[in-house]
Length: 192
Image (cartoon, rainbow, N blue to C red; front, side):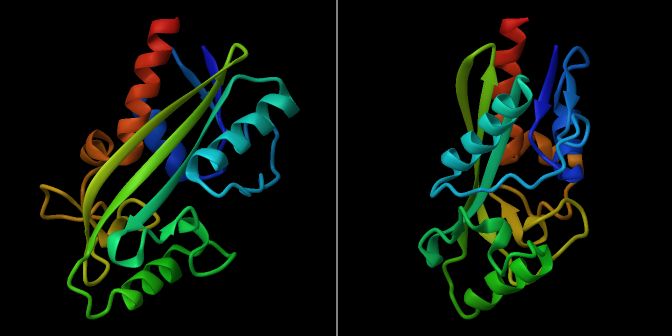
């Protein structure tokens, strides 16, 4: 089975490829010749994931899934949420995004947060949705160089290390994206 993952992000692509069985061939947007940035104009993660998958299915006629992920921080009323990638501005700079979060949480005791990933799948003319959530806390400073995005400031519940410190195989097992992808894989395997 060939399926498109609607992303240009090489880090996301690597994480997802690690989770897929070998009989699923994963294509990126670059692989299908889609180099434009698909606008994420939705007000929710669900809407953004659907917008991206629908764009690829409509423009290229291919089975496709896309994801949208947000970091939701309790003390910031769920921010950055749907704006996680561009929280500090349109350049989508991870270091700037983390710095903004840490500045806003300066002096705040409640640092509880969760990551949420929503996947929208278009397969054989049908639409399906999968969700993954991981609870955790925001650290006082960035720790670790692994992962991407907010990983160095997010410590998942039950762990003493941030996603930026954990090896990819452990992160994939417990992360929001890993949990959503596991649901997607389970669904796809039943359809093969």
